[in-house]
Image (cartoon, rainbow, N blue to C red; front, side, top):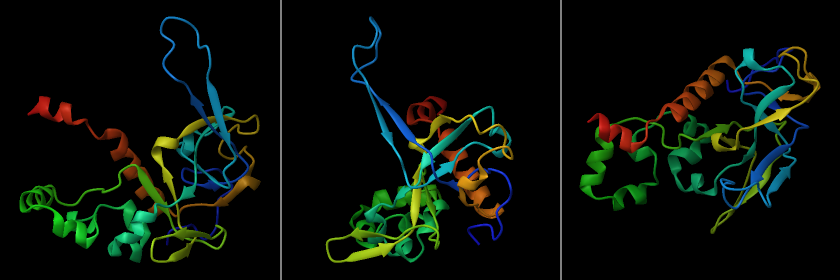
Length: 210
């Protein structure tokens, strides 16, 4: 079960909520020698957002959010993922992470390299939200056909802080904005994956350790 059957009277990590803004500052370059001469702030109003703070950290008139966005069209090119898009959320075998044709085109050396690594997250920065009647359907345009779906996803790179006077604690918050709550199992999957996302060491650090 992806979503909780009954939502709690509190904001929780992974909750789908509505009525909040998404902002992204845009600059040409860092202001190292003089103040910014110009900058932009992109402001969007996503249909839904997802709470990205740990439950106990929600409050003090602020919350970390990320927009709930449409999925990548390329997921449907992979039969393993197309069958159940939430498989993106879990570790998978190397040959499951790419379409069959793409796997066949890999050199034997590359295949062995990936097989040696074994099961891992193929899309470590993404988390798929299961379809639900409360999530509106949209059309994904592919070359050969159109697919109607209401799977959504979040991208960990899009997390931002938002201040709101009504968010004082998980329970003292505008709970009428809450649409869906993750089940305990799914919330654990989200927590595990975002932990790996932030804990993944860069290649140069791995080489230094070796």
